[in-house]
Image (cartoon, rainbow, N blue to C red; front, top):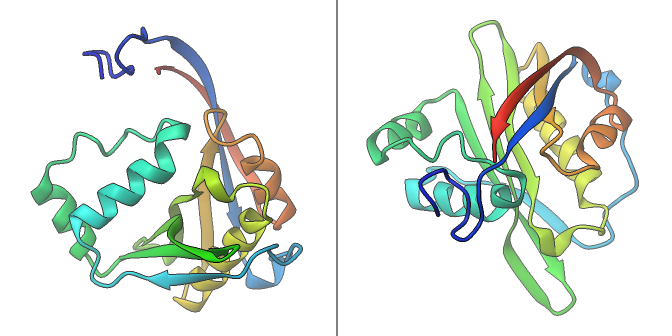
Length: 185
């Protein structure tokens, strides 16, 4: 990486990004999509080590410019992961005769107002196109409401996968806010 955070040999660029906030206030709002084209499971990692979390975060988030937690040191991230308000999940998927232990990643955070935030959700590039996105969002919502959420919310942005926002809307999320900002990628 260069000092600007851009991969070596590439210069950083300033881009306008639109962030969209979405929420679902009742489990009855959830719209299930088509089942995935491959067998997959969503399994909680408890406890989740810093090393496991960082590996999933990089693997799943790197293509979508997830860098907000890169600066967190080991202690800060370990303390975050140890909080009872945090749950970490990994998607495992069958790909032909192979299994991938890290086909996706989900982090849920329970807030003091009773809401549960889908803090991170994503799939590995190798499993895109297998209808796992709709399944994963639905599983995240069901898990959050089963955890006692009074409301499930998240935000996405124009740096995310192009299918992210349409997928959230198709699952029954409603837009609650939009903002635009500049960032360096």
